[in-house]
Structure formats: structure tokens, C-alpha cells
View 1 (cartoon, rainbow, N blue to C red):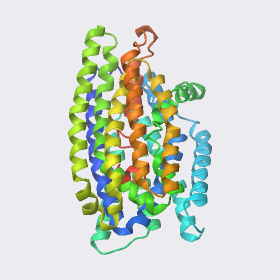
View 2 (cartoon, one colour):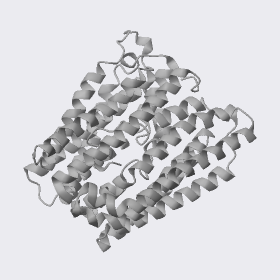
View 3 (cartoon, rainbow, N blue to C red):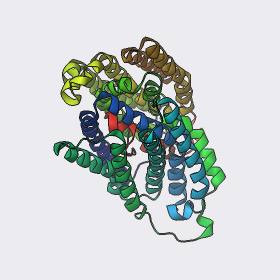
View 4 (cartoon, helix red, strand yellow):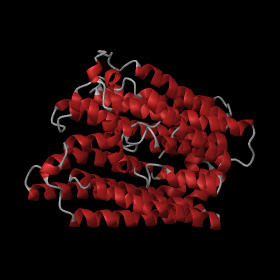
Amino acid sequence: MGAMKRPGDKLMLLMIALGGVLTQFLTLVSGVVAARMLGVEGRGQIVLVSVLAQMASQLTLGGSLPNAITKELASHGLRARDGLHGLIGRWALWGCLGAAAASAYFLLTGVDEVDATAAGLAVGVAIMALTGMTARILVGAMLGEQADPLKIAMTGVLPQLFATVTLSTALALGIDWNPLEIVVVMVVCQALVLGFRLRSLKPPTNRPEDRLDRAELARIARRTHIGSIGPLDGLALDRALVGSMIGSAALGLYSAAVALGSLAAMLGATVAMVALPKIAAAQRGPRDAERALVRRWLLMSVAVLVPTVLVFEAANPIVIPLLFGEDFRGAIACGYWYVAAAGLLAFRRLLIVILQGRGRGLVASWIELALTPFVLVAVLVGSILDDVEVVGIGMLGVALCSVVALAVSVRVLEPAPVTALRSIEDEAVVEILNDPDAVPLEAPGSDAAVSGR
């Protein structure tokens, strides 16, 4: 990709960032519409279906594989249809296994009785997981081909736009859809856009020597897997656990609190997306200049996130019942804690990209792994007390520990030697471009699409 020096690269980042902002707005609208249609219990079912599909996607083909595809296609100057020839069939089996596991988990934990509706929702989990994997791989391929930035951004925006318009129209006409019918709408919108977007890939040259090395792709994917999925919030692990351990109604309330923190999450991801290539490129310059650049980005992030968090903390008791309805007043208490947690988690993204830009991304991955079990602990305590507010408090604690650990790492660790950095700017840019919070890669049925994350 050329270390982000070409004007086209900057345009790509700008278009994808704008696409991300638009997608976040649409996800908020669709989340509100779904809540108005379904109420607390129904919204909880939709969110559980979505987060399980997202987890299946992120843990299998939709995690780090798109990053590896982007890097390898771009570095070798290949077309996706040539480079990926013969690989899709091998990947499909793993994708289907992940989707089936998510469906089984839904049936075991997400429903009281396995009836026709539950079975349909389980099928929806599998299909949404597969379309999510396909969408992320497609965007990775388009990035690797240096496709039109507008087409890349629209791959995420259009499914959400179609779903939002469809759901809003139905609500305006007084049509009350159940969770299964809403899942069908989301799947159809995503599948239609993916079908058209697959046609936008460049035609193959059919040269056998242009095929990518499967072993090398797997090696790159393994090395970046943890950093790509961001287990603290990238997997929506807290939502999946709330739905399976506390119940759909609790998840409906919790997801409303999560929606309130979505703007902070989006702002943090956007700041990180813009900062990463600049910090990575600065590693080849004077250390003092690099430190000054990092300080400026940290101050800018604080200046953006602190007012955002304060505004939503103050608006919390008004916004939740106004947008989602009076039935969601039970989410207000959790909302106070989660909005603060969202601000810290957003700030953590900048700390992570500072470490990535300095060639110390593995440290950030270990910190994420070490803190992930405490998300389970927070939900477990919340399930014992039957109170989602406890989960919000736990997420705030996890976010605070993450920021402290990452800040200490940024302060103490020296950057990796420049000679040891393997095309750091390109790898860093690929990493953030495929970040699920930074770019519009989510299907309309993803957690972001129904919670306004």
C-alpha cells in the first residue's frame, strides 16, 4: 500500500471513515425501530442472534483472514479472483462449522423451548455468520485490489441503509414483525448487496503463478488474530454472555445501554484509524518528533471523547426512554456505567494503535487476552444478582484496567527497532482498515446493526 503516502490511500481512509459514521447513524436508527417493534424481550432475541453470528464470524474466517488477504494481494499486486483461486472451498468448511456451532449455542442457551421460531432464528444465526464472513473477506479483497474507496465504503453502508428503510417503512405502516421476520429482512438485504459487490472484483487473468500461498496466508492470519478481533469489545462477548446467562429481556435492556455508548466507540475507532498510519510512519524519524506526535493524538482523543461521554451521561435518563420507549427505563442505571466504559474502551483503541505503530502490537494482544476472562466474571456476577447494572459496572472496571495497562506499556516500552518492523505502515493500516469498529463491515444483522453500537 505504500505506507499511506499516495493521495489515493488518504482518500480511501477518508471515504471509509465517512462510511463508518453513516453506518453508525443507520445502525442507531434501525436499533430504535427494532426496539419499538419488538419491545425488550424481542429486541434481546434479535441482539443475541446477531452477536452470536458476529462471534462466529470474528473467531473464524472474518477475524484476521481479511487482513492477511489485503496485505498479500496488495504487496504482490494481484487480483482477488486470481490470488484466492482454489482457497474459498477450503475456507467454506471452517466457516460452516463455526456457523453451526453458533446456531447450536443459540438453541442451547437462548431459548426456553425449541419450536419452529427458535429453529428459524438458529438458522438465521448461521446464515448471518456466513454472510458476515463473506462481507469481511470481500472488503479485504477489495482493499487488496485498491478498489474504488466509495465502493468499499458502500459495501457496508448499503445493507444497513436498505434494512433501515425497510424496517422504518414497516413501522410507519403499522406492521408488527416478529424477531424471525426482522432477521429475514436483514439477511436478504445483506445477501443482495454482497451478490452485486462480488461482481465488482476485477476479472481474473487466470495465471497459475498469481495464486497466493495458503500457508503464508494462514501464518499472517494467526499472527494478527487476537489484535484483529479485539476480544474485549470486538467480539460482543459481554452481550452474548448476558443473553445466554441472564436472558433475552436483560439483553434487550443492556443493548440499549450499549447503544448509548456507540458514538464514543465510533469516535475512538475513527481517531485510531487516522492516527495509526501516521504513528507508524513516524517510527522512521526522530524519537522526539514521534513522542510529540503521540502526545498530540492522545490529547486530541481526550478532547473528543471526554465531552462526548459527559453529554451522553447527562442525556442518559432522557435519551433511552425517548428513543427506545418507556419499557427500556430499566437500562438507564446500566447506561451510566456503560457510557463511561465505552469512553475508556474508545480511548484504549488509540493506545493499542500506538503500540501497533511502534511494533509492539503483541503486548496489546496479551493485555486483551488477560482481561477478557473478567468480562465473563462481570456477567456471572450480574446473572447471580439478576441485574444488568452490575455488568455495566464490571465493564467499566475492565475498561479502566485495560487503559491503565496499555498506558503503562506505551510509557515504558521502547519502540521496536526500525529494521525489525516488517512493512509496519502497511501492516498497521491493513489492521485498522479491517477493524470492525472502524469501518462499515458489519452486516445489518450484526450486533452493531441492532444495538447502535
